[in-house]
Image (tube, rainbow, N blue to C red; front, side, top):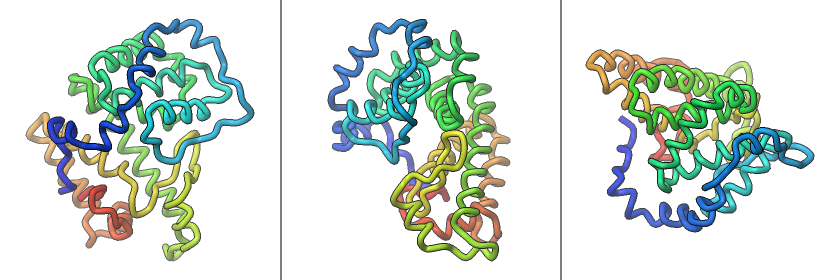
Length: 247
């Protein structure tokens, strides 16, 4: 099993958590009264999008940095990302998730046309974590599993030659900077990335809603079994960060 996910009570005592929430009043105030029509019609100025690598602990800095990802896109895309950041950092999560869900209910087609794959998957993750509709969680989990499997496979394609021997220069690059795959998605940060661990937590949550969900967990564990030669087992051998393992 992967490391246990901390409870809300345990997270409250995390110094990092409090640092990541600092300045939330100013951010919340800026997002409190927005006009959706204006956000849809206003394009963020700039030359080319600049993607973040990791997230700044300072909330206002992180949201400002994220804005650069949406150069050339409507302001609504950045607003959508900002809501996700507030929810993930547990800043008035219930109210902000309600705004997030309402946004998808009223602007689904616009968001589907506007957001790249990175932010569509982030939306799926958010619904899985916070919505109480088990059917919706199960449906969206398919997208998360699909993209993470592809992410591993394409990262390995970048990392290794035809014999699956690693290129050390590429490995260093993957650990120190964002490497683009396609449509806003990035390669797996070999050895440290938490995306597969987070997917495993979500998979446990979704499959735990039905006794036969254990079938899916068993299959996933077999994919990660070091005795089975799969992209999951190969990346398990490459993984070095204990707290982000997925097995």
